[in-house]
Each structure stands twice: as C-alpha cells, then as structure tokens.
Length: 196
Image (tube, rainbow, N blue to C red):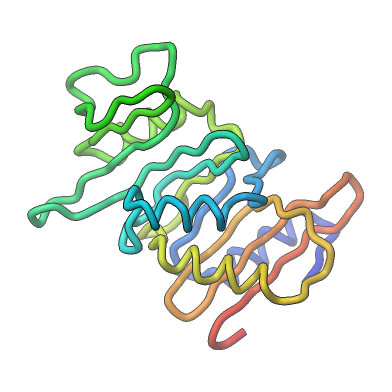
C-alpha cells in the first residue's frame, strides 16, 4: 500500500502491527537504511556474533559500521549486550556495564538493564540511522527479522527507498513502512507472511 500522508502511513503501520514486536526509526526523517541489512545480519549470525534467538532492542546497520543491542538469556537472567564501534568518549561507567570485547574499531559490553544498554547505543551512534524496539511489549527476534526482510526483498515490489521508518516482525509475518525516496514521493507499506 502507498500513502501520501505520513500520519496515515504510520497509523496503518501500527494498526497492522497490532501487538507484534516492532522496530521504529530513532530519527523519523532519516529512517534506517536497509541496503546492507540482510548481508550484515547473515554475516554476524554466521560468525556467531548474533544468535537467531537474540531479541533486537536497537540496531544500526550502515555500510561501514554496525551496532546493536541484543537481549539474551543466561542462567535464567536477561542480559543486554551492546556490540558496535568504539567511541572516543568513555564508553560506559563501571556501574553500568562490563567490557566483554575490545578490539581495534569495535567493543562489546554487557549490561544488566535495557536502559543502560540502549543509552550506550545512542551515545555511540547518536541514533543516526538506528532503530529501537519501541511501543511494544517485546523486542523482535533476530530470526524473524531475517526471515521477513528476506521475503520482502525477494518478492517483486514497487520502487521503494529501502529506508525503513518502522517494521514489525512476528512468527507468522512481518511488515515494513518505507520512507519516500525523495520529497513528494509516497510512503510504501509492504507486508509478508502466512496471512499476507
């Protein structure tokens, strides 16, 4: 579906998403570019950085750098991992998170609370091109994000910008609202899944 009005497009997106886990662009004018999203998700899964059962709380998948906050279970406890580029500023106060990995250009931290992990993500990326799990009871699972983005990009579609304003990803389907490619173009909403 296409929409000329931003509010109408977002209203349709949230109505179709219902209670499904969703990601919403931090900057709703810039959105989240998806040009390299599938390749980045497959690569990080293949080398073991991300796991299919990870819940995605924040992500930025740029052409040169990527960062993410994921939730995992360890010994019955929820932990939040930030993985992404190094920062010049101090990356985290000792009470917020513990350093897991530190290599040239990349760091990983473990946090006990989501708020500290997401705050660190926003400090590291300034939110540019990022998405956050907002207005939802649960963050989307990585396996569903990969599955439904792959299906969206494999089907013939109308010309879209590949810049996501919002996306929902559930077991039975997914939907993405794309920003207009240029001012004056339409918002495009696409949905795939068992009932689409």
